[in-house]
Image (cartoon, rainbow, N blue to C red):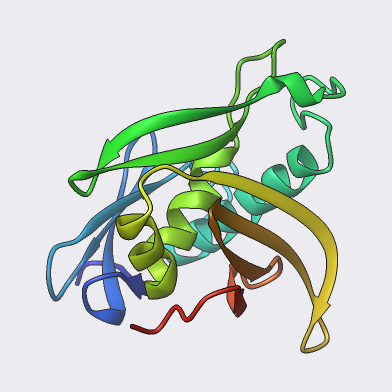
Length: 187
């Protein structure tokens, strides 16, 4: 039997994903074949430690989240360099048939980039964000930490394009938990 793990599929909702491990961890939805990838396996010597593949996926997710959290606080977790605001930039990427700006945080010393994973996770799991971006291809992103929503630590991602869509992201569960907009997002 092939190893699977439950995760969110943007096409099917909660689903099981087949796991393939190479230089990165690759997941494929068993229902619709939607594919996504994760960073390299952590710890690298997981086979020597006799970890299961499911344990490996969970520890890799947790490690990736911890690294992103450190980077969001303004320090590169690899080079320990303090990051300056000028190292944050916007890129235009072609995905899903439309242009998506992405907030990036790139370390000038080691070159690692941490913005992509959280932004993709947010877009693929939260329908109001996808709809907002389809209607507003030219927008900017603002982030701010230090919020508490439903007793959980959260950070805010604001999508701004004349209108503003604020998404509060549970940093522990790594998912959206609250939305606020200065317009009616349900149309």
